[in-house]
Image (cartoon, rainbow, N blue to C red; front, side, top):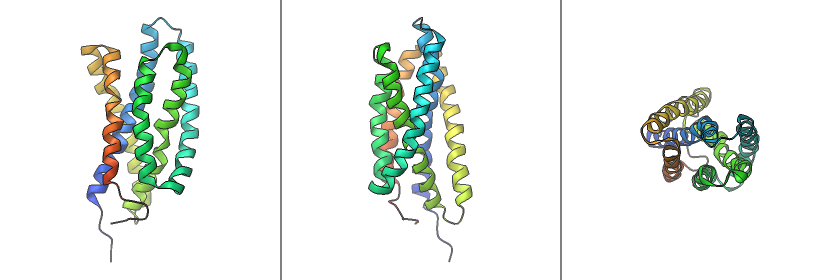
Length: 187
């Protein structure tokens, strides 16, 4: 008999992916503009973003390893909970700390990405290719939409106040992790 789809779990997963992606994409897009407004050279932004992306790759690997040992839902929620203060610190700390905080932000921001792909595959066990494409596609699409929404807010309120709202998103996503299925749950 075909397995039923856990619509509540899938909806929560989509929101988790979207909120995480919005936070990460808007940050990578607008940090260079924020630094430019502080009269920092564009090369500084490039170096910080490089470090952020490099540690993001390490975060994906570490997130997967930790999820296999400690549970997918737990590591996803923990990485999102820690992402919120990292994001706030990234926007508000002294510039001299930006490379270090950017590395923490990158690591935490990407740690849950491969885990959410696996959760999606577990929620759609007969359609793992569709699940993978859905999660990755939504990550890119919602990230882009979030960049636009953050830009609209920045035009109204200013860039730093708009970025300062972003840390709320991973907190909401961490709360939604409670609705995600535990490892091996497909219904």
